[in-house]
Image 1 (spheres, rainbow, N blue to C red):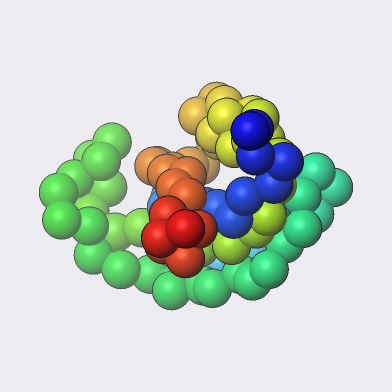
Image 2 (cartoon, rainbow, N blue to C red):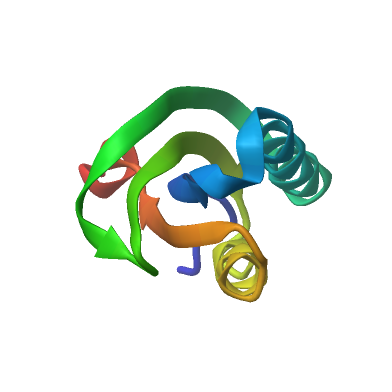
Amino acid sequence: MAKINANYELMVIFNTKLGEEGIKDLAEKFKTKIEKEATLTSVDEWGKRKLAYAIEDETEGYYVIYTFESKPDFPAEIERVLNISEGVLRSLVTVSSAEAAK
């Protein structure tokens, strides 16, 4: 039987060169996009952190984790949009640990 909805976690690392205002705008843009297509459970801003290795010559990134519930096709779409967005260093969508345990 196919799943109708599942819980997901999305981690995004934004480029710190955007500045505080640019990061907030981009984080809000993706929050709004998730809210349109899914049920947003939480947004956890970890803030600026040192990266384990340089990405695009950057040594720091701004981490944000979105937790949401959606249909199975939405995570691929949000990941596609993140991959082509300026200011996003890395992103990863995973099924939340509570969902994987089922």
